Length: 102
Image 1: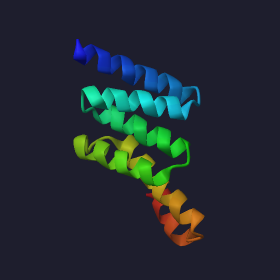
Image 2: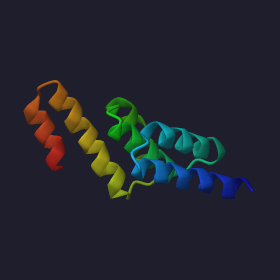
Image 3: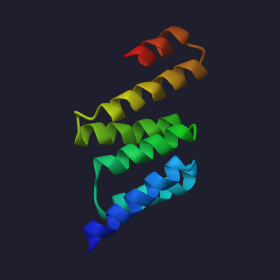
Image 4: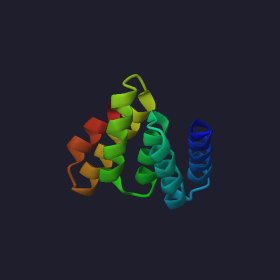
């Protein structure tokens, strides 16, 4: 039963993410993680935080996703985008470009 319920929360999180409801998506992904540690839930959290402009929180969860699934290029790509955004905000364009093209 628990296995099934975490998938429901993961699916709801993905639906809210696609609809632009990032705060709702974050809650669903967190609920999924409360039940079962899943790399896709960490990726979803990282993505929702990224889209909500919370890059440091995004990095935290994307690193967890990568540790659990090192082959997932989606998490690595999004992690680089987070670093790029942080450097852009600081006006460090050379560093931002480095992460944007990796």
